[in-house]
Image (cartoon, rainbow, N blue to C red; front, side, top):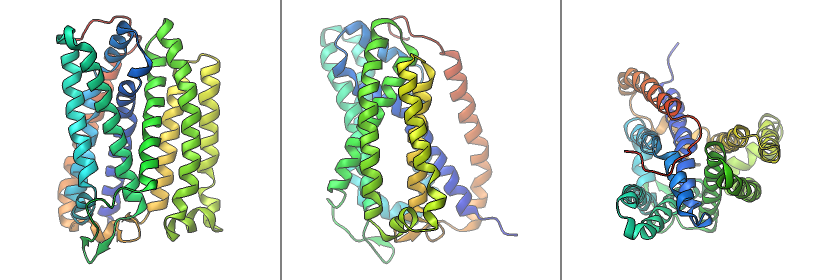
Length: 334
């Protein structure tokens, strides 16, 4: 019995990507919420809630991008030229945001400017992530084994929608994270923001769910054709369950449940996207097996991944455990 290394690696890359979204999503969301929190001490507490973990969260972005290059070189060579502009903008925004994160503590005189930079870097990184995703889902023209489109093909009404949707989603993740990690006036403020962004996110999920199947026949066949739709029906049902748990948790002031329910929404949306894509890695053009490197290469690097991924999970889990509990101080971590 032969081992399907391409499918195994697709699973590992998929796990890295969704882990990045759920972990880095909340700390980008904290930055997105800055304009809605005016008090300087509250902003400091917001930043302190992510200070011990934000840079470690981005490890998963490197793992996902590196895995795509190493394991699916054909997909990488097609996707990257198509999405160079939003991906480069995202990386620059993450750097800009990281600089602002440190400088806002050291430059008290210019702190409002660095707060703006932190917000701008957060929202730009999120919006460009969403647009890159939208560009991929909308479709990348391929001729032979190369990208056949232009520099601006990633811009469309659909990709603009996904960019806005991801900003709203990360803002909800950030609000529910802060609701878990803070207390008092700030906690009540972010609870209110979580309710608003929760409603907006459900609207965007509905829009995306109705729009996406119209982009490709393979998507439509999986979601609106019988008997395939019977197998995917649990996804929207579970989305409704997570939405119910989110708003009930906020209403009952359950601190952990809203955050878990929001992550559940992201996970279900991601699963729905994977269902739509499979077996393609570039929709309707390139399958996982077409894009994958030789089996010998995939088998050679697999043991390294099976060692590295548990180590990353271990130190990430340890960091979250050490810094668990409420953030009650506004002074900087050193």
